[in-house]
Length: 331
Image (tube, rainbow, N blue to C red; front, side, top):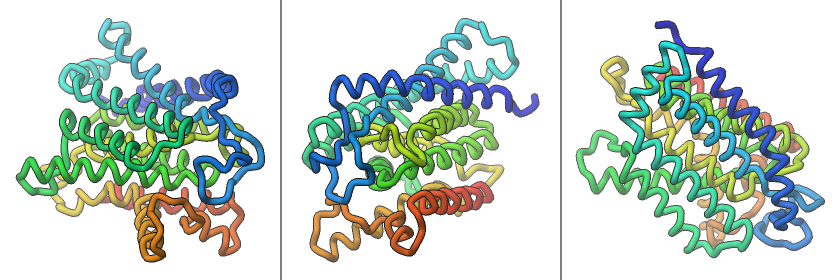
């Protein structure tokens, strides 16, 4: 059987178009419900605002719609036998084998988006937000595959998996500080993970990655370079959560690829947001500030202070993420 490029292209296109067309509807809903990031109210952000007018926080809901609607439609078509391609049998087998896992991931995605929406609307305190993130991470660790790092201990695998999911969620939450930055890094990460999974024959994981990539690319025209909508905490939480899960699902160390360093591939794919959260958290700790209080010490801000425009800074970070992702593919 040849590699199913057409199938993955259809998944990407479906997610792209669904998000692109759903966003105006979610944008109008945000305007009606006053779900806006208003630079005049001083709410939600401690760092200076990156915009001058109230902007709807519609991106998270649009991206979630762009992932779930094509996934649901495709699942129904495949299970009913309406998709007449040879590859559909493998997907149907994957759905039967990993249906519970996929359902848990979807429930977690909805839950983390709602948590971010509550934070966007009411500005949650750090502890309740962390508890919500922890519960979603625990769901992933309980139902899905866990990180082991060659250590045969359930306590270790649960702990490292939960910490990983929490770290990546907050890393992308921190990276949502310039137009297009979080969504672009998320699209690149999803694409790289999808390629790795597809190369390993894990087509259902690859399908999820291409859906996520398509949905985020569908959001970008509304957010970059000039923003008519933001991801908000709902969107940045969703992006971080899905990439954390995408990093766990594929088999990086296999009989065909028995190199121990292959397990480091996810760290390369997500290196930019992980480096960013590490360095800003360290600086805030050294300055005796809570690490969750925003500032302008992110990688993107440093590039702007070095002379880049905001658009150039975002493009440079995208390029760095793509290069590191290509290196991860080599592993």
